[in-house]
Structure formats: C-alpha cells, structure tokens
Image (cartoon, rainbow, N blue to C red; front, side):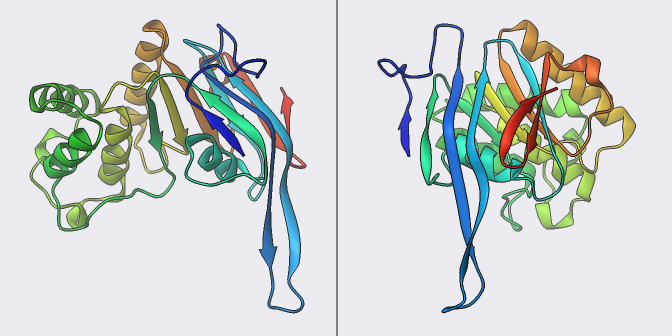
Length: 225
C-alpha cells in the first residue's frame, strides 16, 4: 500500500481533502495449514474526509470498520490501495492502549512527549481535556483502578491531546454515561467549528443530525447513506 503525508501527484488528495483512501483491499488468512483459506474483508474501499467534516462510518459487526480505521492510521497494512493524509492524526482505538501502573497524568505526559508537545502545551491541553470530559479527580489514579467509563474518557483524551487536524474514533463513547455522551458531542462540534475533521465508527447512528455525512461499510465496500 502506498502512503503519503502530502498530496500525491495525480492522487486522490485534493485541496478540500485531509484524508483520502482509494481502492483499499484487505483479506485475512483463516484456519490451519494446509486448509488455510483467504477471507476477504475490504474490496476496493474509497473514503475521503474534508476539513471541518464529521463523518460516521457504520456497518454490521465484522464488516471491516475497525480494520479500515487501522489502515487509515497506518497501524495495519492494506493488501492494495493508497492512503493520503495531511496534518496531525489523533486515533482513539476501540480497546484503550494504556499502561496499568501509570496514572492518567503520567499517560498524558508520556503521550505528550511522543507527540512532540512542550511540557507547558501538554499540561494546558491536559487541563482542558479533564475539564471537558469531567475526570480531573482521577488525574493521579492508576489506570488499572479506573472504571470502564473513566478509562474510555482517558482513551479519548489521549487522542485529543495534540489537537489533531484529523481525529479517528473507533466506538469512542462505549461506556459513557449520558452526560459524558453529550460532552463528547460538544467536543465534536467545537472541532468542526475549528475546521478539524472527525471520523467516527459506530455500530448504529442515533443522532444522525450530528453528522455531516454517514457512510456504510457493506460487503467490503463503502456505500453512502
């Protein structure tokens, strides 16, 4: 798979696109040798994301949504196709990637350093995220002692830390209570107003009006809804 951080000559990336995938294909091998068989998941998927756009990606379980998102962020290689993106990416995986013995504060410090943020910028962003999602009282709590809902807040907060131009979220509000769910959509609305882009995976869409566009992954291909 070809991948680029700038607009490739003649490629799918345009002045109005911050993320563009074209012809993405992916298959997995299943079973034991010599009876292993190839199981196609994605069949030439095309997907674009424009500045300030909030897009929902829906589909049945096993349709390949998480596989596609991992390919978009570069965590998984596609068998074919191209991905072009510009700006900083933030990724919130379905399963939080955390260190059990570190506190929330320590996670923000670690991720801030990895993103190249200055200590001052990391602390400022961390305070804003704590306030926006309402979990500052857990700042010095180790992650192995957090509830599922608070762990989900940390997972989202780490994706938001560097204020990315493109935010990719895989079932981000699983485990949120209703109040946090509303706070989440306030954050999404703020990012849209700031010209930031958000792609959200969901099994189902209940608040369709909150999205600019919804794309369904069906039979390994994207279908507008």
